[in-house]
Amino acid sequence: MARKSMHGEWSSRWAFVLAATGSAVGLGNIWKFPYITGENGGGAFVLVYLACIVVIGIPVMMAEIMLGRRGRQSPINTMYDLAVESGHNPNWKWLGWLGVLAGFLILSFYSVVAGWSLAYIFRSATGVFTGATADGVESLFLDRFLAHPETLLFWHTLFMAMTIIIVARGVKSGLESAVKFLMPTLFLLLLVMVGYAMSQGEAFMQGLEFMFRPDFSALTWGGVLTAMGQAFFTLSLGMGAIMVYGSYLSHTASISRTTFTIAAADTGVALLAGIAIFPIIFANNMEPSAGPGLIFISLPLAFGHMPGGVLFGSLFFVLLSFAAWTSSISLLEPVVTWLVETFNLRRITATLYAGIVTWLLGVASVFSFNEWAFEFEFAGVVKENGIFDILDILTTNIMLPLGGLFIAIFAAWFMSREASRDELGLGDGMRYNLWRFLVKFVTPAAILLVFLNMLGII
Ligand code: TRP
Image 1: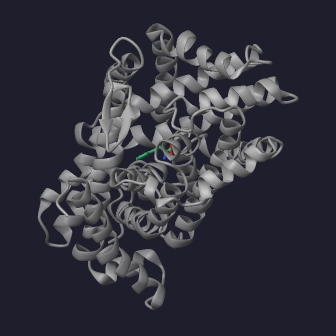
Image 2: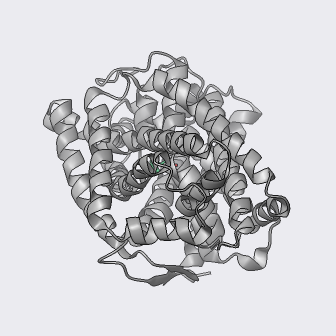
């Protein structure tokens, strides 16, 4: 009864771990985590985020990989088949649709920010940051970069083209060896940055305190929602990306071990990024709540003052761009597999269609930082970048948790106990029962609780 994927299979469990870690570790860890931590007051936010990774993220990731491996198709057709085969309503396919739509919306703004990272490779390499002041790097980012839509458009276009090329060739070729080599290098470079942060004297302790001393008076329900959304975003959950990757996973691989490896690597990178960045912010009297530009202002300042900064800076943005690249691929993949299955398109044609529409939508995010910028308040945080922020909040804070809620409900309440037990390979004892208890009750209740609180219902 086991299906085979028409799109092929990973060469080994490690290939899957690498690809899934490549998907998880990206801008979400290094760009987004520090800036939303800064916007939401630090420690308490980080604590809620970590709790969400453990209570919601890990169980949902296991569920999502499991559904993918059983369905072996795009999220839409997987949900349809799994529902029908277990005697339930085919309308579960809409869960697949929700995911495909979310992936497409996320990629549109993700690509714009990944473009910034590409641009910063060249800026670092030319040495413009050397000796720059805090005001200097800020003005380089805001006035000489974000203010120019044509520049942002150029880098967004380049990044989308890079994503299209890899997805068109099939995500399984080439990705493996690249991730194997570049991920550990990124990790090492983050350690170098943490080393630099340590040299900032008192500011290092200030940074650590900001991140790890919880002050719950600084946290709103909106902040809790953002932390929960971030748990989904950073692990690539709730929209079918990990489901599609799971659909290429061989039947013999252990889903639970795989999930722990991915979640640990992902969380480690995010925490290191925070530990590297906040001391630089405090040492230079900058604002932790500066918003999406946070790392593009703080890190260049550090590169401008540390020995070997030109080299480290360029290398850092090369690796960040690469991490974004391996993530963006997984955002495009679900749509492409669906187009291929449904319309019998060639992979390259499907990728081009999906890529071009995403690129077009990305233009709205490009203009959100200049011509079309407008401010609004979301749960006590002032957002300055109009459509970009709306797309981010809509997808990260609403669509992904909603997708995760239904994935958990389907896996625990609609799939038979035998089916999930066989897939997960946790045995039939405590560990399996713990997982089942989490996805059956705890995860859905936690997500609903946060949603209802946000809506002011409880
Ligand atoms: N997890 C990636 C990051 O942290 C982004 C990402 C890739 C993603 N695929 C996803 C987010 C699917 C949500 C859903 O940068």
